[in-house]
Length: 513
Image (tube, rainbow, N blue to C red):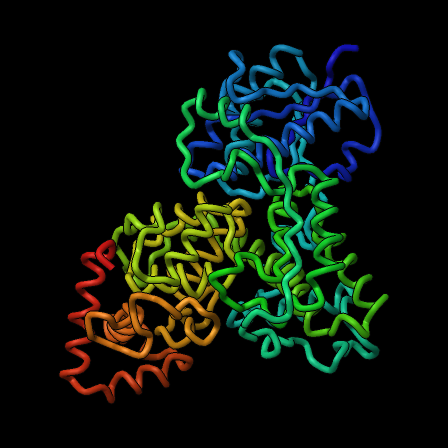
């Protein structure tokens, strides 16, 4: 049968439950492609490239098995145009298709690119929703219209009420509180025992050879050429089931904990499966709720609420911020930070134990949990006043779950305060005390968390006070910074001078520390 309609499926649109696939039609061709356009816009972790290619190939094979017509371009196919413009134009022309359709992309650059492509096509064009998120692009903007600030907590409460999640009678939250965050800050000291991760051993040898032959520049590691991430819906469901059965019971308690011997603790590692849309946030939350209600004596509400807040609240909130503030958001640098990313971000070679472990883990696994990203790596990046463009690109490249809509708002906003407070009401910075309190990174470190300016003093301490002093004018009217700025004012002038001298030494020569 002649192809009448071409439907584009992007690499992060692997939603087998989408209504597009509810029935087969031989006149519809599904178009998928591995493209240099997507591998090269930043330098990506090798596991990220491998995982997306594997997942895309599995998805294309699944569609074909179910009877759908699929055209799939591998990275080294001779007729692969390697960019969307030529790809779509080529396929529409080849089949003389009457119509072209795509699902709303989650990244602004792709949204603009596809709109421009459609203007040039000599056929009908249409756009479908991805049928993935709880919200539409502009829902958050509508919710906050007329309000003075964009507090995530108020958005989260609205979402809980709207979708009746963890709600009791009279629109009141189950457990009597909306937020159990204060119960989610325990330090893990070896107990309770952490179940073995639900990983995989996917041989990537052949795919790695293809990536190398294509000349794609990557970084990071893939131990023994085996990928441990889910790359199919079946894999993703297995990880979800493992989380609910084995990890959820202690997730909330230790979600902020840091430990040198445990990469993942009780974290779900479902973010790649969700951000590629192999799983939907609704089915993840529903599965967690089923576990809670079926065995509520075993899983406390604080564990469940802490997890749901990250998905129903934070994930949807960040997407809403992204579509409200782009494209200007990508250029914000309100604190005028300009320093270069240290070389140890690419190697993990630093004497600062917390950064060595958090960055080393990121390079080895393409993953770090939110406190490692925010309060270790992000904290250092902000205190060292690194340029947010460089920080953004590193985060976007290194993490397997990093797609711009969720990465940039967390990095440039939450972590680096480059947006001037759109996302966060204050910068998330700390001295060594917080890192020492939340884990064992400081134990055995070359530097001492209690020292300030000595040769073996933790660099975070001098950097912290230097940052406050450098940016005090910017934060002078920020009520949430008042206490720390008051402490800064009370600092002895000589002590502050020593702290700033030490900080400048670190900032100028970060790879010596």
